[in-house]
Amino acid sequence: MDLHIRLEGRGDLAARIYRQILDAILDGLLRPGERLPPTRELAARLDVSRNTVAAAYDRLTAEGFLEGRAGAGTFVRGEPLRRRRRKRAAGGVRPRSRWESLAAVPNDRSEFTFDFRLGMPDATLFPLETWRRLISRELRPASLRSAGYGEPAGHPALRVAIARSAGLSRGIRAEPDDVIVTQGAQQAFDLIGRVLIEPGDCVAVEEPGYPPARILFESLGARVVGIPVDDEGLDVSAIPKNARLVYVTPSHQFPLGTPMSLARRTDLLAWAERNGEAVIVEDDYDSEFRFSDRPLEPLQGLDRTGRVIYVGSFSKTLLPLLRVGFMVAPASLQRALRTAKQLSDWHGEPTTQAALARFIDEGLLARHIRKATREYAARHEKILTALNNDFSEWLTPVHSAAGLHLCARLKPGRDLDLQQRLANARQADVAVESLAAYCTSTPAQQGVVIGYGAIPIDRVEEGLRRLHTHLCATQQAV
Image (tube, rainbow, N blue to C red; front, side, top):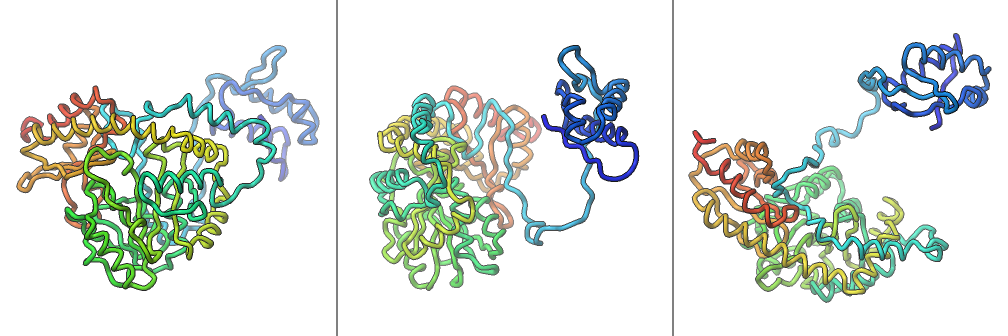
């Protein structure tokens, strides 16, 4: 490893070399077992005498930080002294005020045996060997000969595949030029916000709703307003007239799971048409997994005035680590969105996008979705049955016929510290999320949101039994 040594200033050169190597060891930058450059090499690089470097090495060796190995070189000792990394000086340049107050979206990487957290598909269902074959095919020498900067809107073949697939499976009306491939849905929201939102603009989001989208719009200076959601979806009558953008999850409301009724979809489109420059962002994040009920027409398919931007993602259908999403935008916004994409990251990862295009075109995505839907349907049914039976005195399930999670509200009159009981369940290796975590209004709605993408079906029963012990037992028992 290269070792950077600064020789500015006055004083003994050997002492300065000694101090900087010592600091690197104690700060953990040089780790136990790492080999230092030979004294001759480091001396030549620093333009000092070899004896100067050797004196620094000898002192560090005598103090137990380095060791010489005959015929191999000089190495950091296996058991060095440790100290905490030095903190940088306080003060200096600070971010804009809104970034001081924004909280990062929680990203808990803890592992649980009974993991009912949201947003995670089952990685064991992913066709890894098939994917490896497709990636290898794209990494051939012939592909690398044209490995320059790509199209900001995404790999052409993937845009064709998405337009065709979304049209067949979801009723999306799109040509390949309407599709912009993004690094997950979150980048799509960011690009949309940067193109459409001025500081102070009103943005309407669902309440309860998806925190990463809300926080993102706030970071752009928007005034974000939560709009209540009932059994038919977003209450269109509560949207402020001056809202510039409305963010909705109509196919499988996040986190409640209810679909937006056709009447509400029609009302929302009519509202946008009445309100000048208003835009609707339709986040269709996991509706591919549908267990019953006929899927309703997407807003984008009903839109006749160019008001809807449809956003999709492969994070739930395949794996989050692929980081591939897309949006289907009206023609009037496409040029600006492509420019924003280019300024953001120039283009996505072409190898992954080309492999995904083949995955879709060869029918492998549709096959994977059919297989995964059967698996998730069984878990959904098992959890719903337990909620209706074992948890019926405490929780009321919210109707949901798609996706990777379902919600259950706490019944009126049940006075308990739900957050503490869910924390107790975590101590028993059971992770379940609270509905309140997705609310910004006060008082927050009380209930649980149960994901089933990351938990095998043979663990569901025991996980729910443990959850029942902590959630539904009497206060004395808990």
